[in-house]
Image 1 (tube, helix red, strand yellow):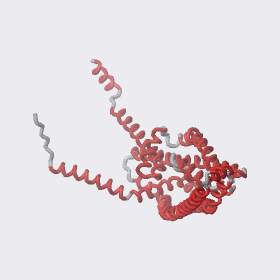
Image 2 (cartoon, helix red, strand yellow):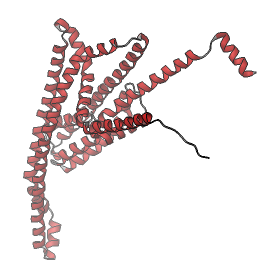
Image 3 (spheres, one colour):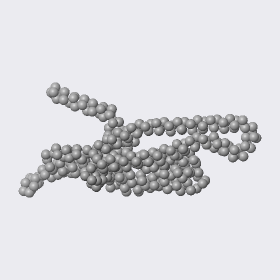
Image 4 (cartoon, one colour):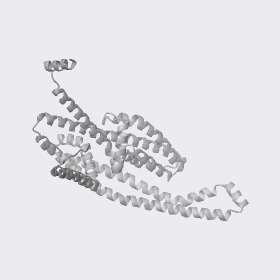
Length: 379
């Protein structure tokens, strides 16, 4: 038995155009992903700064939102400049110190082994040992030089981040200034007051999710940075560990910035801070890594869930899946914004289900009509 399905040419063309349109849209989004990420970061910055900007504008003369935004930005730029001033010089200093002391460390290591010297003299291995030491010195010097070159390359690449940061700050500034005006225009387009209030409620819930997530991450990062500051400060009090006291604050700032990235930031902070301490003392680097790994268990299981549970209201499973998808698509930035996006999607889903439930209840027969329908079914 053959079944023939007739499709009008117009319908087929429309379907084809829809498919082509989706393909073009996906391609355009992929090509513009860098710009979209910048816009997304600016939007998150604007959402995070909106509460203090609104509070400042209410207290300023004339309730100037532009003045409040400028004041908030002045504080943000000052903090960013302070972070760069605290972090970059000590890291460069430690790298230069490590580069200069590597050959000395090798000489010290080879000169403090009398038992090895006896073994070398007995089997006439002095020439081979000297050649090995010279080769090790040469390779260590080359490695330390490459490390310095890598640091320079990282700092050069950071210029691109500075340019993106400039665009983020500019976009965020105008979003903060013009945001309330655009939202008012959008709400004025609604003819149905009930639908307008429903959508307003959804937007406010998503706004609370994003601001709650941002504030929660800042709180978690502050706790982590404070812990690292105290840990490095205490370690510097022991002369045997050879840790300069002036490293405590820069390393704490590095941890604070990295821990703003959920899940991924803490391992990165462990690696970077551990390497910086290894440049001074192997014992200090290993000891810090062990201590910080223990702290991470406490943070991941007690501190972070307690702080974030009331903001996004997502289970650990959904948070992990959101981070995995966001990191795979947009890298570290995707990992940063994946959790609030998942929280916003949850808000939309729950509001839609609630709206659908209300519609079903309105359609159900009431009173006598409901009783007649039930009797008819039973009969």
